[in-house]
Image (tube, rainbow, N blue to C red; front, side, top):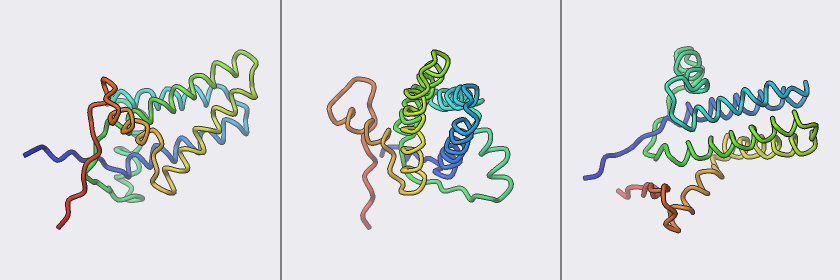
Length: 153
């Protein structure tokens, strides 16, 4: 029997909320530094680093405070990490665009990340996860995890 893999979606939502808030603040204050910090946090999360800022925020602040209860479900972590990677790449590109004097391009890239993070936060639709599973379906190397089938009782 295959191992049942699990993901705490409350941890993921903590990262989404932090991303949304920080990127809106970055726009309001026209801050390449905030965009770069979000990119770094997302890229570290994508690697599964033990020092990923959003994971540490959830593990050490949000969960212990009781603000949010864990919501652990059968799921693959790889699609979520891929989604963080895509967001991190967009925000890294936005940082470079801001530093290169291309603010319109930068804020469009940031806007895409904010919209997709909101879509996932509020409606539980992860575009990066959907992309991952499509790449898996088409047999692209490295995209090895298929969607977990729901158990019927």
